Image (cartoon, rainbow, N blue to C red; front, top):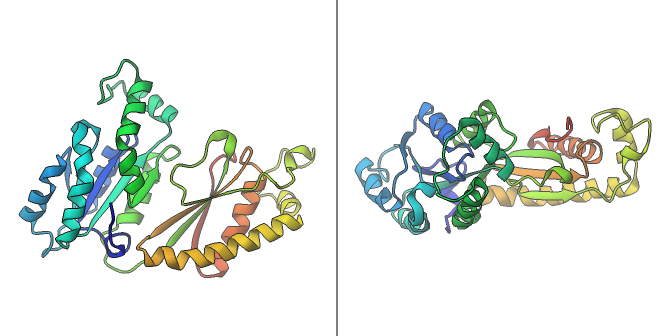
Length: 294
């Protein structure tokens, strides 16, 4: 789905296609977009997108349209990539947002709301696997991927508003630096993933084990290691090199994930330090720790 850089991020879309896994929050995202000035159409067949765009005169008028396209359309989702390319050629800015979540989170959500999965299958596991296979090309080609596994409805709202605010003012690139534990799974929406399990683990130091990477004792232990110091220097240089290039490609949000075994010590300390380094460079960096309380 080859979009030009001007069609994403800071030059807000005329058409925002919301797609992704069932149970990942598409309905919540649609509600947020509607509250923020988008005209939302749910379950629109992709082949009708061009007609809807013509009806709204999107190429000439400042109308923002959000359409939800998902597995309820069956094989029609395969047509979406072709339709988006056609809209781009007409000068209509189109951005594809893909919402994802871990399989076990999706299963839990379906168990809680007792709704049937849109794909008929003997089990929910098989339905999710089939849907993931169907939508994988869309996920790979999406402009923005948001993993909602660890987001509540309020956090998802904030993320959608920050990403697709109707304000026309140019906003600086925003960076999320997130620590995590590999034992709990790798974040699905990370643009860059770094593994710091090569560093000495404070878990095996009795007085440090109950602490976290935000505690000065753990931070000093981790960052005083020569390999940690060199690692942070190299990552800082790499990020400084990449960010302007990401921005030139139209990205408005970059997610950096730092992982260790459990997400309590090493990754937390390193993420905090990288966040501090980026702030010194004038980069808006939000540091979060996914697994620190697990």
